[in-house]
Image (cartoon, rainbow, N blue to C red):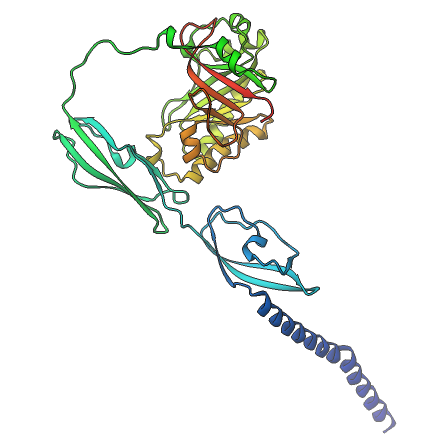
Amino acid sequence: MENLGKKKKIIIGIIIGIIFVVIIPITILTLEKKLKEERQRKAEEVIGFSDNVEVEVYSDTTLEEVVNKSNILITDDRKINTDKLGKQEIKFHYIYAEEEFTKKINLEVVDTTSPTIFASSSYTVTKGSDRDFTTYILAGDNYDDKPIRKIIGDYNPNKVGTYELSYYIEDSSGNSEEQGFTVKVIEKPKTSSGGGTTTSSSRKKFSDVIENYKTEDTEIGIDVSKWQGTIDFQKVKEAGCEFVIIRMGHQNGIDGEIILDPYYKRNVDEATKVGLKVGAYIYTYAKSKDDAVKQAKWVLSNMGDYQLPLGISYDWESWTSFSKLNLSYHSFTDVAGTFIKELEKNNQKGMIYSSKYYLENIWTENDYDTWLAHYTQKTNYKGKYHVWQMTSSGQIDGINGAVDIDILYKNR
């Protein structure tokens, strides 16, 4: 009986211990949790959270901007991934009335931006032309790589006449755009001899560009390729030229091979010998990130031991082919970015080359160094640019014929 009494005491002690060590703390924690939940419920009545929030695809936005509440402090603010359409649950922590809470909201990334069409008002084609205006006209979407494209209206390329048509494009979110244009089908014109040429009297003299644009912040230079033939770089240097951007090579059309410019090595050697600052560019038809990586590696393998302080520029200009490449504007910019990043991995600088029109309308997400082409006395391009190609009709000693003249801004 004595042993039985001892056992009972032990059991009772264990039970009491469990109550104090386990049950009471759990009860307290549960009560505290319920009280905190109640405080949070009341706080959120005041705060007024939106549990379902929409943000635009590719928008540069943060959690704090999405929540958009000035009466709380978000302790884990961060950028929101808006690269893919769809719903996602966002969990975050915030402080209100000196107490930290945890919150979840439903976020949906949406695309409300319509595709864009850059069609001319009128096109003229010869009878029997096989031009496909669905892909010939530049049009695209900010997000959708493969939007619906179609031509509305009757058009017979084998019959002379004037046709009123419309270009229609619709993305995967149902955003659409339509633009009318006219096609004139004419008989094939008779061939004629002659044609206009740029005369030396109409060219812009390099000395005039120096006089009008040379400052402490600028350098004046040229860009060249095989089309300038054999260049006397000593004369070019004596004319006041400070740098030259040299074509390294060009791609032979979409999916074509890369061909080294036959004058590249000579141009780099001679320009370097006389002390000109040198850069290079590649004329590309890249249509994928794989293309971009291959072409960047081609550039790196053909650099040799040459020093290119102005880096390598990515020159993509085949805009009448854009609509057949299945690229959104975002994807297109990503291809160029892939090229530049591959260069940077190998300690080389990259730059985007394009004209003002396409920089403003297609390269809208470009945040790389830019080589702007805008043939005018004073550019009104509002974006950032490092080099300005201001004419294709330049004249400089040492080159027979026209040459592009460029202005480099040292502090941009």
